[in-house]
Amino acid sequence: MSTFKDLGLNNDLLQAITDLGFEKPSEVQAKAIPILLESETDLVALAQTGTGKTAAFGFPLLEKIDVASRTTQGLILSPTRELCLQIANEMKLYGKYCKGLNVVAVYGGSSIQEQAREIKRGAQVIVATPGRMKDMIKRRLVDISKIQYSVLDEADEMLNMGFKEDITEILSHTPEDKNTWLFSATMPKEVARIAKKFMANPQEITVGNKNESTSNVTHEYYMVNARDRYQALKRLCDANPDIFSVIFCRTKRDTQKVAENLIEDGYSAGAIHGDLSQNQRDMVMKSFRNQQIQMLVATDVAARGIDVDDVTHVINYQLPDEPEVYTHRSGRTGRAGKTGISMVIVSRSEVRKIRGIERIINQKFIKKEIPDGANICQVQLMSLANKIHNTEVNDEIDAHLTSINTLFEDTDKDELIKKFFSVEFTRFYNYYNKSKNLNVSESSRDRDGGRDRDSGRDFKGGKNDSTRYFINVGAKDGFDWMKLKDFLKEQMDLGRDDVFKVETKDSFSFFNTENELKEKVLQHFTDFKHEGRFVNVEVSENRGGGGRRNDRRSGGKRRDDNRGGRRGDDRRNASGGRSDRRRGGDGDSRPRRSENSEFGSSRPRRSRR
Image 1 (spheres, rainbow, N blue to C red):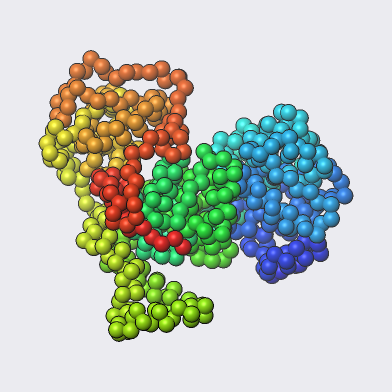
Image 2 (tube, rainbow, N blue to C red; image 1 turned 90 degrees about the vertical axis):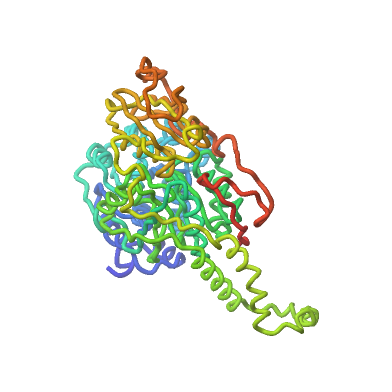
């Protein structure tokens, strides 16, 4: 089928489709719409983000409901506020010629009473986040006992976010004979269980292979030492002057920290994560959609509502904990038939994760090198030259030409061009001149040369410049010295040489870092849980050596494993708690950060775009 008319949609919807500029249905639309229009059936549809799933269930739903009735007939559940609002707005656009249609968005962060009033006015379709919908049902502010159609959009992401019990309870208040349409980018076991429990002999359509990435996206990875991750990010941004990207971090704290440092270094950036208020999130997303922000730093959860067709790059500043989540991330680019690039910044110990993702998305990653300073200077210079060449002349400048010509009357053409471009070129040249190579070899080995213990490293300044720690995990927890070293490096995002003299015992272990990392280590392992138990790290009285600690404390300060606690960065606020960053003026006059910091080395400020 080549047109929306061929799919069997009514004239009201076809007129709205024309207004929206849709020409041909996407693959998921062409497969799903005829099935949903022609039969009363349950449906499981697997398709990547950005393939037009909202229209695939939105058009049939609007075709089937009775707009003359004020009864709620359709319920759409989505994982985040942004996606909820986006779906509701799109449904209103699809149904703009359906007289009497009322679509209401129900989500947290807004007045629940006002949402209840809108529903009571007669909402044929409710688009909701699970948490707010469950709350409204509990308060008896909504009646979904007569709905005919329920849609689970981004079902895999809702389950990843822990909404399984909420979804189960919500659907228990709906009729058993309703039709359920489940749309998902991936098909993990949890989604399959939901489908089996709430659906009867569902038809299934798949666009591409399950969990496979769209062919419009090219996948690249760049390997650096973990301590150089932020510097690598800046170089990738500088090497792509027209970048319009989403940068993914694992935690809210890292998201805020990366965004703050990008802004301080002169980039056009913003952050979106769960600790922002709804108003703050709306403002950031509005700026991003209007391309007032070039780089949006986001957590996986917050990014579920990002539906912008012109994103050129997705940058994985940190890989997700679950490989399937990478599919959602890369789906932020290469949308609406356009091409995109998904970049991953990895340390050597993370390369194995790349191989696992390749098997899931059924595509190969291209290993690339972080650009050097000379290359970045050339790219930036030519970018400026092209912008000047393509700039439309403003004739209002004519009144000032006499003064300008007088100023440069003794300057020949070549010298004038050099002066003009040196204004921009000098900033990048001064910053990147003699800059180090950030790339590391995949085949290189740690300096310890594969010894049984990581105790042979000659660290900076000798033993008095390092701190030795006790940690209450060991061989019983599945760690040998190498696994523990990798675990510590990945948890704290440290470089390959930042953790050394690792010594594992039966139920506890020791390790060293430089003194300057002491605060970071102790702060990271405050109220830290791993696989359901508290992991305690404290400074050992046996500093700097590889010898035995007082072994009377076989497990450190053991805490009750059943005691409540918050893992990792959830215990800190969005701005990362106390800030130790030093702020200064523009350009090279700003004080430099420590080279050993992940966010080290200041950069000449970029001009805002």
